[in-house]
Structure formats: structure tokens, C-alpha cells
Length: 126
Image (spheres, rainbow, N blue to C red):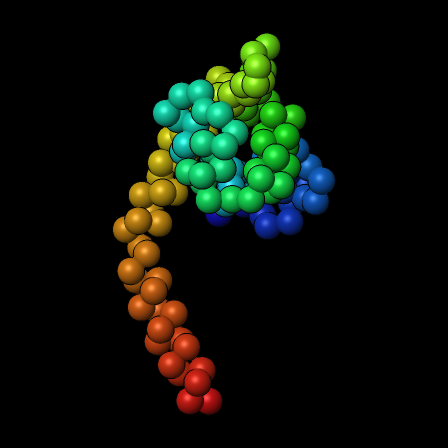
């Protein structure tokens, strides 16, 4: 960490736009939704199934992502109404980061599982 980026500095202080952007990206649903939308426009129920999240949580996260300009919501005047979600240009800038996060998770998942087992075993003995 450089001298001009100390933890708790104004740049990352509570309520700053940088902190809010970081929190948005760190949200587990943001990562999963972004990955899913990389494949193109996706309807709500398809997103819900692929991400594995409740409709209520998905609705809230999608609204937040739309408010942040990361996704676009397109409503089609059909019966029944069709709604699709897509990444915006800004949202697309997260794809490389999301890919790196997913790659790290895939590569480290077994190590984390082993570490948890060791921890749980040692905690049970204590």
C-alpha cells in the first residue's frame, strides 16, 4: 500500500463514492449477476435460476445495479410483459475483474475447504 492510500483515508471513508463502488463490486450477487449477464440479455427468472437467489433479493440487487448505471432494464410491451437485463458499457468494465475473482475462487476453493476443516477440527478439541 502506498503512503497516499492509507486505510480509512478520505478516499475510502464511509459514504464516499469510491467506498460505495468497492462495496458494490464486493457484493457476492454483483459478481454472480455480472458473470451471468456477460452472456447477453437475460430475463429475470433465468437470472434467478442461474444465480440461485430469491426473487426478493434479486429484485433489490438489480435495482441497485441499475441505479449505479451498471445494468440496463428493458421492458417489452408484450403479453405477458417481457423484461430483460443487460450490462451497460460501465457494467462491462467489471467483467475482467469478475473473471479474475471467479478464477481465484475456482483455484482456491479446495484450499479454503481444507483450511476450514483444520480450523473446525482444532476448534472442536478446544
